[in-house]
Image (tube, rainbow, N blue to C red):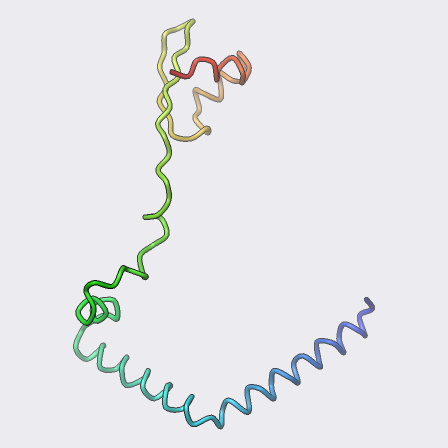
Length: 117
C-alpha cells in the first residue's frame, strides 16, 4: 500500500472517530455518568476510602475481580538435580540456574536432565 493511500485511509478513520466523539459530547447520559464519577471520586477521597473497600462493604460475597493475576498462576515445581560425579545437589524452580547451566554446558542437557530426582 502506498503512503498516500495509507494516509487517506487513516484520515478517513480519523474523521469518523471525530464525528463519533462530537456526537458523544452532546449525549446527556454521558454527561450524567461523568458527573456521577466525579462526585463519587471526590466523596471517596473526602472519606478516605478506596473503591475496592466500598465494593467489599456493599457486597462482601462478590468474588474479588480486582485481584492481581498472579494469584491464579500455577506455582512452579521445585526440581532437584544431583550430580553423580560430585554428589552436589541443585534445587531450582526455573531453568536459569548458574550451576545447572554450567553442568549442561559441561555434560550436555540430556545427561543433566537425567539427574533429576
